[in-house]
Length: 282
Image 1 (cartoon, rainbow, N blue to C red):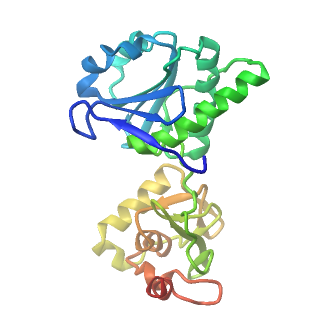
Image 2: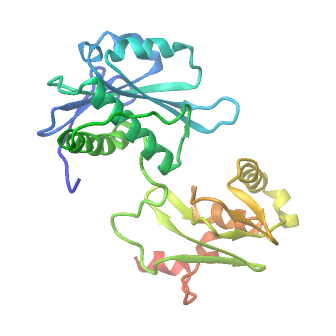
Image 3: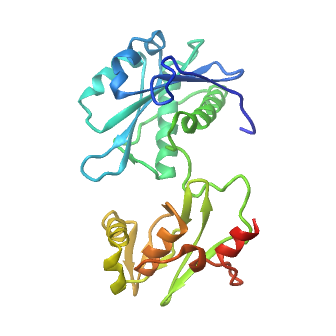
């Protein structure tokens, strides 16, 4: 979507509390609430409609962001059934105000949401892929428009579930792709609106430096990435199995080099220009 006018309504005056969002000239509606306000959420008349819903939280065993995506003819009843799921702390609901979303439409949206959330790779998806439903071409187009509005509203409501890790910034950083090299390892990356992304196929040194013991965060982060399969041993190096988001260029460089690092001087353009210089010239 090139632009959108969004109306947010906060019944309690709190952006973290029960809230709804609508887009101008769209018949849909989004509603979100923390689990602590589940009773208020399910009492809303809108929850008696057909639509899709998303439960967001953290997997207790691993600490990974986790999501469950579902559909229902009566969303209120289905969400009540998920009280037994421990992980979720936020529920988001998407319905049509004119009740034109049918069970088949909802199943199609559930399938597409699962597909895009899996591709984005930000959350562990707590279910198997849905079968979806076959729709006439015109209905599919309508649901793709509905899905586009969901994409727009999710970040506004506080979730990056469908946002690709490699999403570029609205204004591209000068210099293009940046490189971080150390002892034969080479990583490629760049800034994004959420931090700094290291691209799949980049490599990291196989062993931490002795100085890394002074920086427990570096060791912990590297060990976590190795444990969850993001960093895999390949020949003489660790290799990134997927695009990986870091909080900063320094955090990314520290993992790649196996010890504390200044990302502003370790990340460079192909011609050797430092990230620090790019930032100073901005």
